[in-house]
Each structure stands twice: as structure tokens, then as C-alpha cells.
Amino acid sequence: MKKLFYLLTLVLVVACAKPTTERPLIGISCGADEYHATLHLAYVNAVYKGGGTPVLIPPMTDSVALLNILQNLDGVIMSGGEDVAPAYYGEEPHEKLGYVNDFRDTYDLILARMAHDMGIPMLGICRGVQLINVLFGGTLVQDIPAQRPEWNLIHRPQGEDDQPMHDVSFETDSQLAKMFGTTELNTNSRHHQAVKDVAPGFRLVAKASDGTSEAIESIEGKPIWGTQFHPELMFEAGDDTALNIFKAFVEKANEYRKTKCAR
Image (cartoon, rainbow, N blue to C red; front, side, top):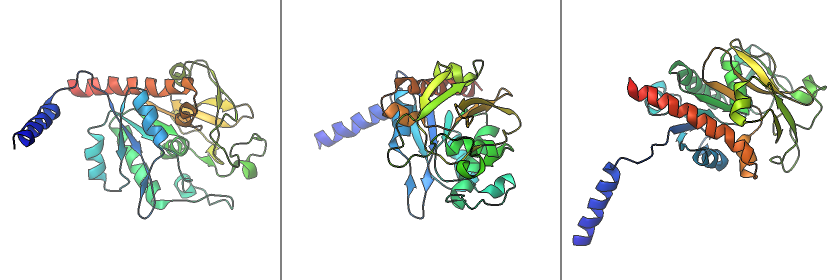
């Protein structure tokens, strides 16, 4: 009994102790099928190594529940996944359109809209940047080979798709160039869609060498950025430069947390 009492007391002390260093809470959207919520652990590892505490946001469409979760977060990462339904940007499906997950579209759009309205810093990766662009009024190339054949680099390789595939160049005055700490990256590529018309309030700040859209960011002072490539997988493959975006994003989240706590 003494041992049990000691263990319970220790648990209470640890639970009530204030951490010496508070890490911002970074929510990450998840994929979903009929029975599972899914997320590549590379997102979790990159956020943690970047200085944040990763929090997986369960796929759901209850806006009240999502609001309760968001109120405790300091940043949100919209992760990769399926194609966004073209109906959301006023187009009919192209014959080369990939799998569309209606449930996830609804979940992601609610989540991203609420995060924006609350002023929470947001980073979109792959599907995430496409989702953000669509949410704010932009459009997508539904299939690069069919609709933009001049974008002729390999963007969705067969087999290994996490290795460096092509160069991406950033606008020198962009926030993302500062966040990455460079204007040139050799990135992976695992997509067949990309930003077409950039949403109002955003600008295209990076392209692949063939002209493919690779990154956007807000031009209205909103803390929103997005990359078509996967920096979390680049970091997992050993590219330490790719971790810079997560470090910078965690810093933005930390700034948001401090203003939130000061209210």
C-alpha cells in the first residue's frame, strides 16, 4: 500500500508541475477511412524536433468539438492526402482526378476555416496547400500530365517517392524563403495536382524548374503558408534544412500562444 500511495503521489506531483519550457501545441490534421484515422509519423517527428508538441486532430465534422480542440492549439498543420473535390472550386471532375474523400474534405475545410478565423498560424503540406488555396477561392490543376504537359518534370514517381526529385526556387522576398533559410531547395515530389489560380489574398512564392506551383503564402499579414512538397519527409530522409520550416512555424505558433495568453 505504501508503494501504491507513493506512486499515486508522484503522478499527482508530475501532473501538477509546471514545465520549465513550454512547447507550443501544434495540431496536425489526419486522414480518415471508414474505420481509421491516419497520419505519417514524419509529421509528428518534424514538429517535435522543430520544438513543438504535436497533437493529432481527430477527423470529425462537429464544429463545436473542433472548436474546443482548436482553442487549446497554437498552430495547425494541414497534412497531405487525397484530391480535393473539384466542386469546391467550381469545376467538373477531370477523368484523371484521383480518389476524393468527401468526409475528409468537409473535416479539413471546417478545420482550416476555423483556424483562420481564430488567427491560428497554419501550414499546409501537399493536399494541405491545395485545400488552403481552394478554401480561399483558388483553383487546382486536377492532373498535371493531362492538363499542364509543359510541367514535364516527374512529380509523382513510381516506387520510392520520398527522395529528392527536382529543384524548387523561392521568391527572395518571401516569408517562406526566410523560414527555410534559403531560396533554393532540392525537394521530393509525390503529387499529380497543383495550385492553378492562386486564391485572392495569397501569392505564389515558389516554383519547380518546369514552372509547377510549389508554395503559396498570405499577402494580407495572415500567418498562413503552404508547400506542395513534403518537408517532413525530406527531414526524415536526412535533409536538416527542411527542419527549418518546422522550427520557424513553431516560433510563429509560440508568438500566437503568447498573445493568446496575454488576452
